Length: 203
Picture 1 (cartoon, rainbow, N blue to C red):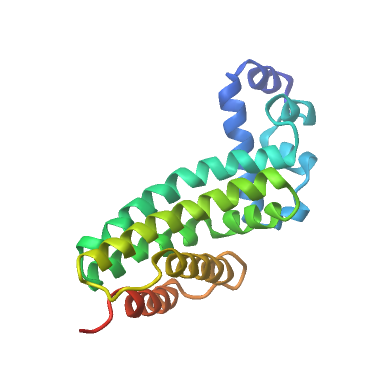
Picture 2 (cartoon, rainbow, N blue to C red):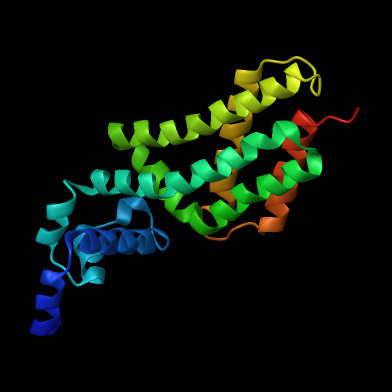
């Protein structure tokens, strides 16, 4: 890199540098697994040195925590939109499930990398599980409201929600978080059938 460009890099605001590192990490994790992520390879994509990485992150797990925060905000929005399905019918519920499929189409490889990282670092594991459990809590509320409204026969709302969400997350990671993805339309039909038959059984 030319010296002038390097000086420009050094003068840029720290938050811009941090964003460049996060974006480069997202790009790499769409191409390779978490286990293959190296700081030197990562920083070569940003035009910065290895030393600059450590000005922003203590280590790779700290980087993964920042990525969880990034994608987690969007996932919360999708989950909160879904959680309103206690007031809608099965067709609208299916349309809202499409939001999860779309999220994993765009971020599946990254979420898969975070899932991998969670097996190697306790803080990443806690953050990842917290993200998933937030969706479990929202789905529990939705199921319980449908039961209270008489739209669904009584069942164990917390455990049903946990089973549905954990199965959904695992399936979407397997179908859309790896190379050789399943067609998104096929994925949506599958999850809509499972969730629909559970939460919107035929009267």
